[in-house]
Length: 540
Image (cartoon, rainbow, N blue to C red):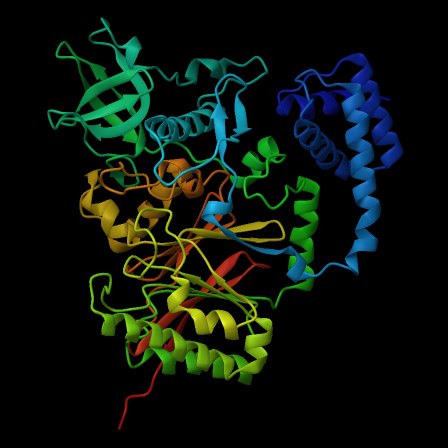
């Protein structure tokens, strides 16, 4: 084979930090000959081979010929089964609803530089160690993403660009180096004196904002991790000249590295399978949709008529959604401290909803209904992640709907290769109340973008300190957004919006009550959502 072909092979594998010995190079050449790829398919074929190789547990940086042959045989088998499975595939077999407390706990191992599964029993009380470990995991995951970013990671090829690379430092490296400029990654938090600090694994430093002209995009709240550049002073403070969110890593990159890890506990799929599923959804399930509704105040007189109108539209247009996700609050006022009559009305409202749904047999038979509790709803606990709605209050729904799921908050939907995270929390107001730096005169559209950017860059649904947002420390991994999901539903009291950031589609379905009932329709084939508004006619 020509030297030009060998150069292409070496270049592609080097892109994934792999080196090829003579035997491994010969194996790849044989694979190319056997697969009979066209010239324009060689690069993509080699990339698929390299990605699949790196997903193997016994993969090494210097490519093993034996592992390489095994990977190729596996890819051949999967390719051969594709046509056979095409007739057998059923969306119902690839639709999973995942509660937060069912997700396996994966922790970051600094020694191995990867995730390890934790087999210790998890408790609601947690422990001081788990509280510390959850914050350390967040820092380590963000840090390894930062170090892989092109602005921080040196190329394997000789280049003059190494001079432009930014080097991260630790707080312990500040000592005695007054007047020097540093770039640090750490968590924004207040110390005992009430001064804002940046904390990392080695210590902390007080921040001085007077020298900062304008922060970067995003919402910098207490508990967020930030990249901070500044000059260390004689007073042992850091005079900030720049502050920004850590760079986000796309789902495809994270999956290419950790694709073998089953973060959701429903079976890991290969990148090849993901690609095949993506094509299948786009070609065969283009009409399949999910509905997302939030703030369904069942005690509001217009809510049930609004749901009825939505169902009527579905039947009239022969457009029955595969999934309808209903997020709380299911009441306009909290009943946690109410009397028995308030609780009885709450249950009666759910009974009325069950009667309405079952009056539409085609929807009842084919649609999955998912109920996610809101901040005012009655559950066992108020700390995140929250348990499902109390079964004693939703008995009629459970007995009369064949496909009903009472989910935790947050919860996830796995559909083929897609992961959809659903979170019901008034996140915008909570983040803004605890912000420590944001651009002045920010418009509403910018705020929506800043919120989405901050949540995804932080890789966590609630990047806040535990005194601001209590979290069950043993289950903090359930709030993690790494790898990035395909779609994220941030059900909030805030206005409806949709934003796609680093390949992740984020949307807020708005509030489903009153005369203008707002909800969102998500189409998996397009990985996109559409805002829908039901206008009810005025009485009289």
